[in-house]
View 1: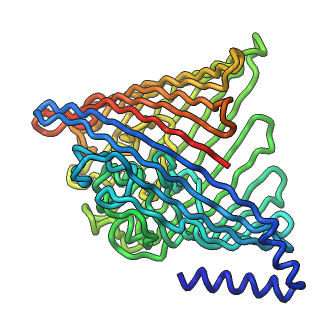
View 2: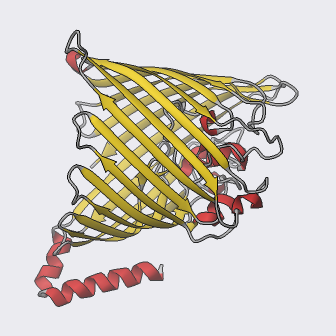
Length: 449
């Protein structure tokens, strides 16, 4: 906290010395307040072939309140408070067969966090942002799918001097897991699904060292470099490198291209390709939670689809390197401990795509009903996961179907209502052949201002 007080003091000092007190006052009086109020309800009915079926539910209300100052000669400050508060919960709260853990903090208690507190400076085509903030990158992101998103302590420099190109360099030192990470209890599924290999249920509500969060060993953080190019019509190319000191180096690349059908302009096909290459580095701190710390893994994904007026459909396929070492499930898996999940084939819940040897296929269709009046979108999808025997988590294949209905209301401006469902079949199968499946429904109301 002393670091943020120091940053604020320096910023105020610069502003004060640059001009009169009236100018300092105006950056606050002309500042911007924004935020969101969110209500989230979830219900999951779990079917276990070995017995012990249960239905767990949860309800929470919260969101965030943010204030950003106006900038003075390019300098500005920002801060945001995030909160989640449960209601109508069963007792005891920490019984996860009764209360879903993904909306609240440790032991399913309510909590609040100063999630953003940053200094930002803009000069021509360069922006520098330092402090607590949201990040959304392919292998490190907010993953805002429950109540409070993942948040970061980082130093981020972006530049657009090159035509049609965005360059970014960043160093990330701390990570504050959001509420969704509590779906995991550590291990290989968690580390490949976007969260800690240790125990994600308890690591919530605090900013932790990047390595401590990921593998329970303190490290020097993660350095990032990226370039995104959009200079060719309908083509986007991006390349990212994440150097997670003493854990892993991650290279991510993606190409997206769209064009007009030769037969008719009403059909607009599109295609995308992505890859991830990971290699262990330094002291191989991943060995702290299992295996020998060695990683040599590769993932690729392909997506092809088309848009016809208000209808969009696509099919996607991905593969992860097979694992020949039954004693080290991490060796050929794609680990992503800080909220990143860019796979074309991920389900709403099923994130088996990065487990070693997974071959995944997904089909999805979206329709926008705007021509009929309402600002309404509906999505249907089905994903199938062919699992390798040495994936480290499940002993059989799995699949997931689901839907997503998104309605931006006309009767209340800026109010969005969302109803989602996912139906996972054989999400986990143990060595005895016992299966775990579920039906899950979510209702979310977001009021943004």
